[in-house]
Length: 576
Image 1 (cartoon, rainbow, N blue to C red):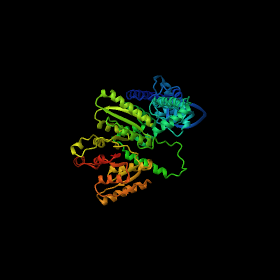
Image 2: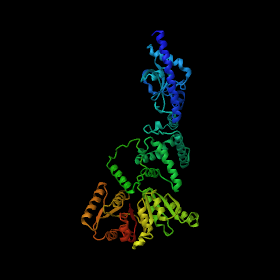
Image 3: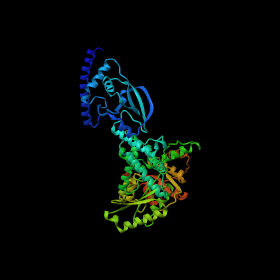
Image 4: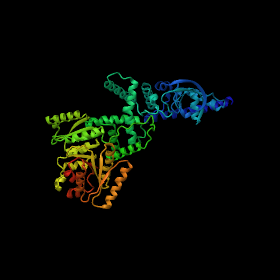
């Protein structure tokens, strides 16, 4: 190319430079308006944040221009699209562009690589011209830098800060070496400091419990195994991550623990991560999972595990279940009428089988009554009985209607255990005013009505095929397999066809889960049949569904539930 041609190309390149500068200015204004800056990344800053270390390997290869995100020394001279930002750069930029168009050729650029992103060491103007000419690839000498956390060409400043925090977290904990299959990535700055705080607190309490200094590595492993993974198991089992596609399991781990702490402060109880997850699902869907479905799930799991080969290996990175118990938290309303504390004593027997915590609830008329002498005496007695039984228990005070407060608090537990002082009356208006009836109707959890304390060894299942009776059936199988309870079944007593159908349903379900039940055939009204069977077979627990779908007819004519609450001498588990 002669001098005249080069001069023409140079003047044309100057105009291209002005256009590129204008585009860079527009992008800067847009970036300020949207809060998304278009600056190039500084290699020195990024490598420092990500603790990058250079390899000795330098190779020549073609690299994608879109993957060049920064510069080693000139990151302030160009924006993220490599548009020129400095007016003083125009002569050099124009000369490089004219040289490119002269077909004289240019040497390869030189870059540093971190992850999938590149930073220009030499050749910033060549990259700028190539981008302007819509070139997709460019020849480059590449020196790779290693980091614990990979870098993506799409990463912005906040992303790098997050990854810098992750790098520091991994260097401090060595979790990438200890648990290479686990991803502890979070999506916001500052969250790794929270995780390090969790580990420090866990280490502190380990030291108190073991009465010795705990090595940091041991504390990290213990935190993962006993704190982090159980919460992750809850997250995975609940499926709530589907509702937060842009978040990670670690994000939700931190959210659940924070939400758990907020719930504990509001409720006055210690709250399990499972309950925080349930609350989250309830907020998202408006649904509360039934205890019956959980019982069925546990029975299915135990049946599946029984079918595994005895020496079948488990995955080394398998996430442990938080609990195999159905009733992990039991709500026990405390009443002044119960001088024998029957409901609490019955709850203790269940808690011993289920490794459950007891959540006592004492409802008082006014706020002032919370600090009364009577309230203090109740609290003292409650704590004394929990300590004597070696059962963890917490008592909270609420103001208002007992039935309303019990129903409201029931959602945070798995079972409600309460005394039967005043069963629903035989008269319609009295039944309508029954507090016990109101609790059974409104409680989102099964209610164990306790007229007297029972060892819960022999249960009678009243089954008519209704959805509530099915929940009672799921509970019956759970009790048979986990509590070694003997199960008897009374089906429909008024229709032989319906009885055969209900018996088949129960037989099939019990057989499918390797459980046993004995069927009792007694003719006559259901309530009479249940009482006769209970007397003949030494029943000390009745399992049945709750009230039916027609509350008006139940109030007018009564129901089997009401009749059994009046006549049965032992606990009745009433399912929703």
